[in-house]
Length: 339
Image (cartoon, rainbow, N blue to C red; front, side):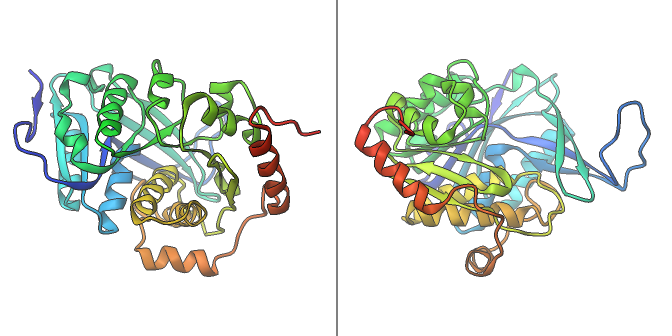
């Protein structure tokens, strides 16, 4: 029978609650990405904790927020690694143990020259949270809820509880999971992968798809992460854009997770959307300077120093063009006419 930790205890008030995936990552560093039907000697291999929501929660905890994490693990070595890692960080954790199934695992191939990674992963469906396994107070006793929508049903329920209680809801989405549209109707701030808006709306250009997402689902802000090109967001009135920061990349694993952790942190601090994108891009970039999803979580002062002094990649969007397009989208109130 599944076992919930601290299930009956009254929930304390926290800043950040995350509901979603944790993972154990095996990082395999290679001198080059292997060609088909080849042999490549590895440089190193290490086993580290990761996962989208769990890593974002750890980042916020290290930055001084009170955080809670809700997820599922197996009662095996990988589950123990996750539990002990989160306990060391000081998070309030609610982990549901599932016997006789495999923990979520990922084998991450890291190219030594660029730091870029390729992920091979496997997740047992029995690790999916069920709506009935959630406790309302875990969600309502928070200032911000962060979800990854995998699976969507418990994320939808958690987001509904959050909205009813006045809790801000953020989402990290990259695939069209069943039920994701119902989730989006409960999300305040969506920051997705580059590909997600096209998969969702059938519109390739984020300048066009992001306003459509707001109109269709009622989000307060919709944005995309763009790798080295940074991040773009639409808040219903104007586009905001931050180019990516240049760093010596060792491993890009967890960059997106850190972006979302940074985004949540800045929302809770009351920062502007423009400053939030800058901070999140800087936090993500610095995480790439060390191995693993959580290896490069840097202190606030170092992130802000990179914001002030860091070199940037070329801008994907010109600021004058964005102002012009913002005015046009806001005035039209409908699909952008680029004519």
